[in-house]
Image (cartoon, rainbow, N blue to C red):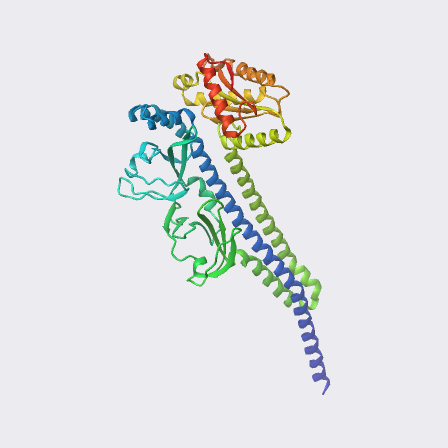
Length: 498
């Protein structure tokens, strides 16, 4: 071998050795990094699907609680019971119920219609923007559902969230309320990233709810064989994740999340390139730079991977921020589900939970506490004269005054309409309940300023002592309610003990 050939051999050997070293270094560095980024991206996508499902579940719960609150108005329930017993006519019932049901509807966002049925399922009243356009006969479904109806104009309604709630009086079901909401409150939850889709499927997978990409409106379509059915994927209680290929050859990552307590599932899928594409492209580019500069081997590998690491950190930060925003929205929705939207006080559902806890605690500690049923006097004339906005402002002031006159450990909440409940902490003696009730009467009797007028309403308070008056949640509510009506019958503005 002459010197020229020897030199060529040395150069080739050196070049091959450096290139192989660069490939080995790039492989060693890039492989765990790709796996790590791949896992993090997949976990973030799964967290996004979990947050979407939790937010939709919380929205369903909120609408169900709104229906229960509408059906819980005690005076309307009593009138419905009188109608059932033949004590009043249908006309009297409708004339009494319609304006009060309309008042309740004004505070419900996205409400399209309220239909009230008697205990036999016969429709009595319907109100709301879409009420007169719906079919004359509607099927009463007690389970929360999403449906469409043919309208009087010959077109089909947009998908409507349908929630039913029983109306009870004296432990008897005397009727039902059927509320129909638009899905506008869910719009933001269905607007996912590009190259992805979020939809709702019923548990039987016969209908799909999604947003039409052209109109931006919710549509209901036949589910057809979805990806899960095609691959025979069974949904577990915690949901599942799987990879699939669409008919056009697009590879996607799909997530199925059930909504506990409801016959619906959230389906989310995103193109694999959307989840992993930009990260992989950055890594490939960096590795190619590493190979091109393999003479510097490990040093240049590290330097070329720096933009990838920055990109990974930015994407992880963006995903984490998105998750935090979704979790914040979820907490806000859950708070709305437990608190009255007008006054900010605990709502009826939260009050019942607090009352149940108070009963359990008192039973375990062998102590007493009081449940106070507070009903405002002369509130309706304020609404009639000054309007509902003034009435709402008055309720806010009342709520603030009630919160300021009770003890720190006591609980006050809005039961519905102009009715409030106060659950006291354990009492040293029953006379303490009288003191608290008199404070409530005093603060509600103070004048309010409306349009330069001094307005005075007052309150009647019914008090039930556990366990002297009653020993269960239902019995305490009934006893305090009955005591409140005795206080009203005695001239209003007073206290009556069960």
